[in-house]
Length: 327
Image (cartoon, rainbow, N blue to C red; front, top):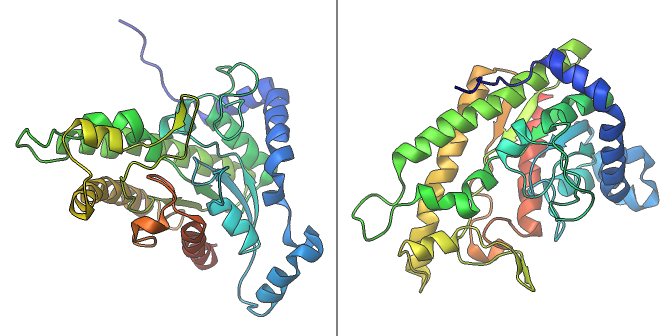
């Protein structure tokens, strides 16, 4: 019988940081060379930031913060703006961003640090060391952020993973398999989130800094078959349409699309409820920002998984309001 492995303790993570500090710093430097603009403090942005500075000076109660972000394509969307871009450009925050498009919650809690940029299959061969939780603790120790932003879970249920959650429309069963959904969200997801949260808070406490954590549970997407890109057989998305089509949920009109939309709503609501439970378990330390109902029409989504630029901007406004209220 194989030995049961445990997630790493903070002491073990700190030892890994020392062993792999050169690699961690090298990967981070490569990323920052491309998108380090998000980490530039407002006072160092020059004349281009003059309108934002004027806006902020007119609202003296509004503060700017030094933040750290770990996440998926909602924090790292190369084909448009994303939440981190908006929090930086619209609200003045300086954000060290270690998110990578395509990341799953499993990746962020237990997976290796990706060598590639933006989730694209480019760059040196992937290594299994160090892991993302080590990278996160290393950046907490480097940046000493005033808050940590987390975005995770969407890619764990979208794409191929979505298939096992849905019952065939001809089966006579409910559209969503409730036992599978509950087991994944309230057991597997919750354990992974709890590990990231507890480890991050412990790292911050050891540094003597107050670092609240802000999560979100996405908004309600429209599973209409639109992906991000398809080029010479290489595709990103769609994430929901293949499963719905295979399981006899058509998309032949507004009524069909609404039926698909209402099914995905159950996933988003279940994820948000779990994140709220983590907020309740960590009062004053963890905050779930409710982004549901921000982007309400299909036309305002860029594809099945990502809002358009205006949608991300509106969601960033909600996250900023939470930062202002709780830091």
